[in-house]
Image (cartoon, rainbow, N blue to C red; front, top):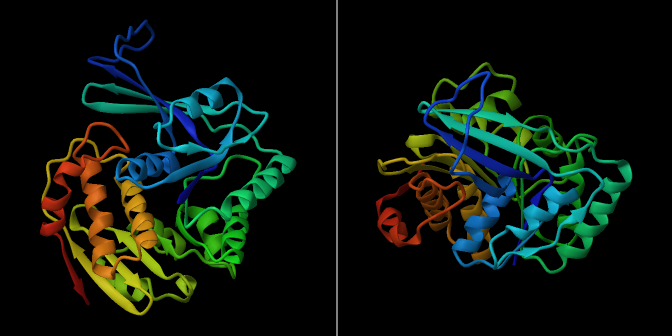
Length: 309
């Protein structure tokens, strides 16, 4: 079983408009509401590829109840209730553009933070792999993911971590490392205080930096250029075919789902990377975020090349 952790989930509301008119009424006939947050995108994809998955995190109020009730049916919900109301994030699709209005979410108390740690300890024994995604809500300490990884490591469970900024930095500077991380070029540059990474050719040296010591897998997203990866002391370049993109939002989360499921299945290095990249591409080919059509899996899998460099 794979446990997904979403500490700051949201109800994602999508309003498609032909034209967005300011300072007047805009009437909507077609509204989409989904259980959102990076970790729940991971959850949906894992469910769609047939993995047994339990979803946890923090939910509160009527919004939290709505979110739990609208998870995919095979997913086992095991969230921790908080006093604040789960946030709402709105995307207005208009004039071939997307305008987003994102709530910050509720402030989490110290007792709620401690309560979730105990809740997590109860879940970890039934888990094979843990996938942690997204930002921390207000009020939680910057090293909170480090605390979760410490618990997982004490139970000999591998963690796939997809976060950025201070939370990721705190984990990498700690003694408790995840099995896998999936940064992009911008996130890597931020971690190492570089203005930007000029070329993927730099990556071999960059992900060999002492900051990443102890992380088994580093998979760096390169968009249409595929990925660059390090597994222990081996480096790989992954090349992917050109595809028609419908909606790239959530493709990184789908890749995380692929890494988690491949770790659970103990796939080879090559198959892990191909599996993860295929799921990211399948998501990009769909209009709905966090959705994959497995009918196209084998065709894309055969077109991916993985070279040790």
